[in-house]
Image 1 (cartoon, rainbow, N blue to C red):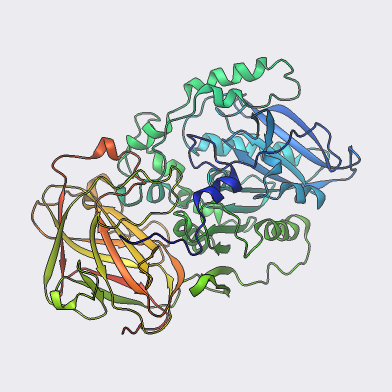
Image 2 (cartoon, one colour; image 1 turned 180 degrees about the horizontal axis):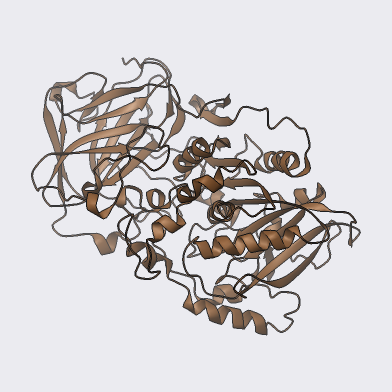
Amino acid sequence: MAKTRTRFGWPLGAVLAAVAVPAMSTFAVAPLAASPTPSTDPDFIRESLYVPVRDGTKLAVNIYRPAKDGVALSGTYPVVFAFTPYRARYVSDGKIVDLVDSPLFGFRDLLKAGYVVATADIRGKGASFGARRGFLDQTEAHDGYDLVEWLAKKPYATGKVGITGCSYLGGTTMLVAGTLPPSLRAVFTGATDLDKYSFVRNGGITAQFNTRPDEPPEVDLASVPVDADRDGALLKAAVAQHARNTPMGKLWETMPFRDSVSPLTGNRFWEEVGPYTHLGALKNPRLAWYFWDNWEDEPTEQMIKAAGNIRSKLFIGPGSHCVPPTQFSVPNEQQRFFDHYLKGVDNGIDRDPLYSWWEERPNGTGALIRSATLPGTGVARLPFYLSTAANDRPAAFDKGSVAPTVPRPGSAAFDVDYDVGKGEYFAFWPQVLDGKGVTFTSRPLSSDTTLTGYPVAHLTAALDRRDAPLFVYLEDVAPDGSVHMISFGRLLASMRKLSAAPYDNLGLPYHSALKADSAPVVPGRRFQLDIAMSPRAYVFAAGHRLRVTITGADPRQRNLAAIQVSPPPHFTIFAGGPQGSRIDIPFKTKPAFR
């Protein structure tokens, strides 16, 4: 059994320590626990209040103004805003947890640098009134519009507003920006999506995200009441309204197709919440953009596409979901960005290369790559063919091989194994699944070989029933047998039809997921799945092997117990010949093998 290795990846404990993820939340990212923040701090003064939006719903808003010795500084300042479902201020273990203290967003540094910071709970969450109609819907978007304009008109504001966030908070930046508030000038966002269906139901499958239960009322009741709500009566009244919230898991579960009409919202909800449907607004020249993410995080492929469609700045670091990379200061870069676009500081950020990413190299090293083109642009994908021929199999590996030459025809079959483990609750990256499907392993590389961009799997398969999901993984196997997950993809067999994307999909396979395009397979008959896998910038070291693993289940599917069937689906993967399975890998130079 191979050992799982994380060369640059962050273990879950590091993620939780960095962002203090609350239990049972969706796209959960929250600030670090901190000592109680007094109403007056030497560096800022804070006030919290209810602000009514256009339909009269009152949202809980916290405002932090630069101060000296507890007295607000005079003058006007740009505002940086964050809009959260995770309670901007709440009590945990007797301490106040305040979003302003999160090192991820660098709000305290922004206050010292001459910004007003504002945070708010979305409707139906935290201390805000109202009911949540849907996840990142247009109601939330227009609420954000109203708060941005309300903040811009405060006497201590310059009238220019920036918005920031990561994960769900990143999603709020995209949705609010799509409404084009006149005062919004700069958007700094991480780990969210351009196409919510292709992200949440990637390949037509619900997996890592949005299969969790909603929080009980006690979670929101732990919010800190606004200043005027001294006895907490308003907080209790607000949380009572949250009982009408649309359940998130049920919302996604009942919309299997991109054009599904939600029985809970009464519309084609995926299109409402897909930022790509607002691309015209997002590309407005009034808005400046900066995206960031990390390689071992599922939204990264969406962030690259967003940067390409909007033509914005982009940084990708090593590590996991919303974890600040040590190789690059996200708060410092965010401040440079806001300084230029909200204060007019000529700091050169507009002349820097648009795109930067961390290229992971052998022995735990790496290099920062800066480029005028997106990662993978101009890098040809080289075909690597799956083989089951006995004399093609490398020593010590008996399942199959992968090589740059076309092998003789063959096949490998497996029954879906649902016993893949539960994994970590917040597993933002897949774990190695030895023995849970079929594997194909290369001979050792004779020299270092660099992958940059999106691998694409072309799998020819047969199935003993009309539909089932298939998962494919690209891995790095070290000489000692340890395995590092590099890239992955997934696709439901019935969603295999290719079509034109409604945005620039960077030349990758796109599946419409429209109901009319869904086509169950004929049991026993061959079909092809074309799967865009997650992007990476990674150097496979000399002596290491490439490995392709194919399974029918993934532990990040939190609904495995509900969807497993008996007997399990039986897949056959065909190799060799002109229609054999292969994976096209964007290597900068053609690899050589021993």
